[in-house]
Image 1 (cartoon, rainbow over the protein chains, first blue to last red):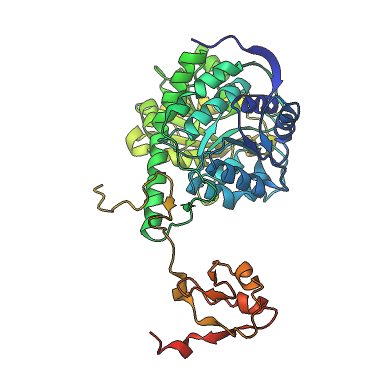
Image 2 (tube, rainbow over the protein chains, first blue to last red; image 1 turned 90 degrees about the vertical axis):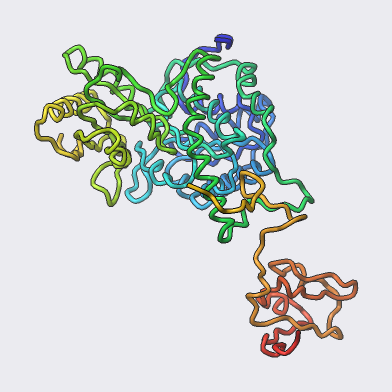
Length: 398
Length: 98
């Protein structure tokens, strides 16, 4: 470990996001406030106003403009930052597609909230799921320390010359956004040092005033096919890169998260729970209790959702006797939750075992210890060959 | 997968260099009408060039001339011309021109 001890304090998730984003020295920030993200926009604005960060803040009239500003600035070579949630994320939908297609390495914090449809000012991952195929790298974190650390890693990932893709870091709104937790904020020199390798890489093309260049707009026929193939290939490369950056971060700062997935007590586990976000923290406590009661259960925390960590998941889950997936969103048109549906695509590699889908934690309903306890018990029963429900909406059975 | 395609973009992201080969559509092929100038009415105000969406009005010193390689025939120049110096004429009228 090379890093100096950082300032340890009790901080709200949104304050951590703004504080650490500033340490990454973005040059252009365009951030429209929306519940439950507003403190991110407010805090980073005051950091700049106080003269602690030399950045241009573009005051925009909405999220669509915010993402357009970030894409433009990114194509001109700037490091950019924005944050949003729910309605804001879908209001910038066309421009997040362009940002990805143009390969602009924008970093965005998305504070998860239920999406339009049913007006729910409450937590849920439906906004993340709604942008699944946007071509962004999507990462989900569990707690406030992970917000701090992953945000730094997001810049290393997005701006890596081999990747050149926008990265969306997701954390649970209302839970982490407003949760006060002990967090160690890395010191500026260490963040600078960790991001320094980017400066040694070849320079990506940027817009130069007066120069005759075209960015992202020329994708007819084979140009389109080629751009899509390169984007698709970069997404595939990103999987390994996430693991490498996480390892390097661990060596430098003494904290690491497993990269694409975090495996908790999986080595000797006979059954596995797959969860993400803050619910994964609760699940670890449940797993400790169930292990004390003699059930060999482990947790796979899904950190990388796009690209989907196919190889790591197969490696972690192969040979397990039953698997349950807890989704905090739903998949219209499929019977199972979105993450469960994706996992089922790997069934032929994992093995012919029961895969149970659970929907829980919609609209600020807690994914509780008893809920996850029930999931573990039912997964253990399925592993023994007993009958099981392949899809369960936990709140409806309470 | 064996890729037979020859790469169009030299860069990872879809960037093109217009000094060599700009990847652009030949928008002139879309045209069904073209603007025709009556030079006696034109006072070289430049509004046609300002409003032209593909920016294909060329400055000739005392008037503007349309570049038919790019003109889509949208008619905005003729619509905006305050002196009605530009008139949209059907492409059929020019069918016999080389």
